[in-house]
Amino acid sequence: MARAAQTDLAVLAVLSVAPMTGYAVREAIRDQLGHFWSESFGQIYPALSALVRDNLVEKTPADRAGSSTFSLTPTGRDRLLTLLSAPATSAPARNGLMLRIFFGRLLGPEACRALVQETKDQALGQLETFAMIRRIMEGEEQYAEHRPYWTLTVSAGEHSARAAIAWADETLAALETFPPLDHP
Amino acid sequence: MARAAQTDLAVLAVLSVAPMTGYAVREAIRDQLGHFWSESFGQIYPALSALVRDNLVEKTPADRAGSSTFSLTPTGRDRLLTLLSAPATSAPARNGLMLRIFFGRLLGPEACRALVQETKDQALGQLETFAMIRRIMEGEEQYAEHRPYWTLTVSAGEHSARAAIAWADETLAALETFPPLDHP
DNA sequence: TCATTCATGTAAGTGGTTACATGATTCA
DNA sequence: TGAATCATGTAACCACTTACATGAATGA
Image 1 (cartoon, each protein chain N blue to C red):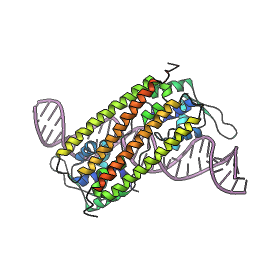
Image 2: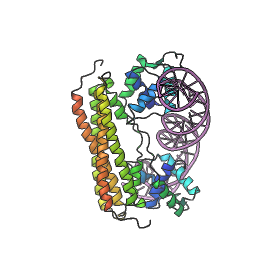
Image 3: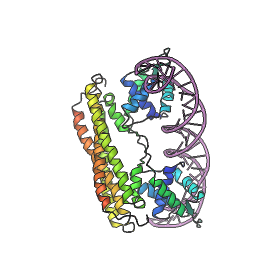
Image 4: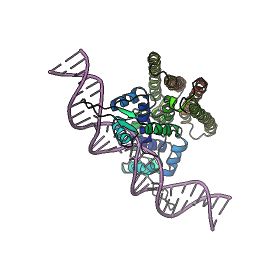
């Protein structure tokens, strides 16, 4: 297995939609994949260099402004398909909210309510964001072939956010019935 | 900010329920926190050593079998409350499934259906696991004060799994209407 | 002219995983 | 007697984050 296959995958994938600069790759990852993927800034350029070295990506000479465009080579496209077909390795779970709720007896019901309310507010905000993304996507015609798939990921985000809100409502109600802290 | 605060938090938290061996800490994290938290094996003992060095955890001398019990000191309890009160730092999102769906046009509807079906099956399995956890928790009386909080995290897992199933059903239906790959 | 955005990188540090290594205890 | 479990650790490696550093183009 190649090292940093995850980052390679994301970079190759965004380049498959259109050739672009490294800066644009970063923006695409942040703006289009942002709600389910992230690459830290300092990783994209090293990854691009390695991909160019391995002939998976082609770099056009820099113009006078110093910017250059990167595009997929045929080999790069093959590699992308291979990576996409490989099973997704999921990062180990680390949900700080759940850890705090699990040991909620130590914090007490009041502090837990605050945490849950915060989560609910975030989920509500996410729903608004997704609604906005849907509106934006309706207007764009150039990526018509991709749009049905993109919509599926938005829908997943919405399902997840609604689930979070439903849980939060139940939990806020339940926490009202919990006894307060003995040792405040 | 302390280094490895996340691991310290998890270790201190499980020790707050009862004193135990390092091995038992590992098992508790895997078995009780497993569905929302993980610590890799090689991190627990170093973390325990550091916590002992900093007087947050007390280590009883090893018996002839070489095992020793760790327990929270009063300072350790304070530190635990501090860490629990700090805002949860969430790891950057990296959802391999969503990445593959987003670029689903490259894989084609059939391959996507397989991925989504797999996700649905996993979620169904999780629901069974949660049902089992609920049954087990009903029987245990010794941690009665913690149980209401533990139940909240199980409920969160159930909400999340049901949301995944609902999304999967919608998505499987939608994918049937997508045009097949042009370049197979 | 000055702030913002576009653009490309490097370097240090670190949190975390994986694999290795060892040995006692328990129970079949 | 031998396998599985309990128990404790180390070492190497790596992916990733954060901060640093630089400079051109754009537009107010």
